[in-house]
Length: 473
Image 1 (tube, rainbow, N blue to C red):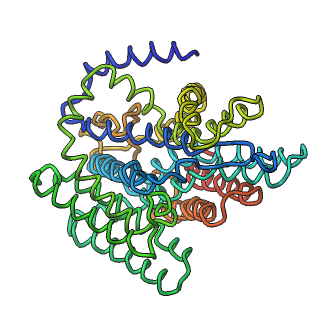
Image 2 (image 1 turned 135 degrees about the horizontal axis):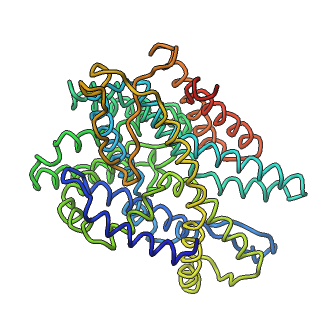
């Protein structure tokens, strides 16, 4: 399939989508998620540069924008990962509220969501492990292999963080329904306590203890959008919260214990990420009317379909594709201007377009893994009777479209395996620990061949734990 085919297909889909958008669909949420994905890809195109060291002639990797004087303030403006989690929190609340009302139990819902994430992610881990092992077997220098793996896998932390958020949805959404402010305050307070511990111990990596609480807190902010809290707030109140959040960020980043830029505050995540997430959630609400109008425009719907229909695959594979394009460019002797120079910026445009073309071409066939995960979920045994979420006639109510813009899948039914909920949760939590541990270790030590192999094994084990026993027999 060519890029032209993709364009025609997306335009056709955009025309159909204009006629089928449900009135209750949060189009601003769709727009924000697609915008975040596009921003992440563009930022990685700018941050990944393979160049020849003028003093040694060896290959080296540089992040040219980080050396510019304007980098620190601009990095906060383009740091979209908190917004990603806010949007994810709202989407999770939409899905869990609807499906739990239909009778879907917590283990079934969490397992279904984790499968859609972990199955595609495990393929990336396995591919990186095999690539690293093969590179050493053919004689690639160890430092080259390590540098390549570090670049290829530096985005995989997201899988672990989002896994923690998904596992926590049934509990934290229930707490939000009863004590919304107190629940969020508890998560923020736990994150702050870990920050104090990190500073007192003078051990920066102790901040990884806050890896889950920080992202859980940001994810929790999305629940407030779902329950209408943001919609009910006045523009003045939203602007006030935004200003307060920015003030908190300015105060924290002016102190020596917090990084001054939006990249250093990402891993380990700090309180700055929570403040930024709150500000971005308010800005999203302020922009929602305009985004709603934008998403009823056919070209915007086409872009949303191209980017969002396989969002997980696009996120997981875009960085390996970008690094591969950069590597081939360097090996073929493509123009190699001084990183950060005017010529370097000019060459980012054709290189960026080439990267996007390759990403879109790769995502379509690799997206089959998302489809496989979806089919595993969709083939869950049907519920029996209204107590399990069916209608009195035994038919399931229609499934609303997914909030992430991808193709809707039938809601998974209650866990009908031989294991009760308790045993199902044990399997789910064991899988989540494996996924989470691989992500945290990648953040702490960066990806090398041993970690890539261990992480791949952990991810495959997680998939086996998540697939219902009936599906493996």
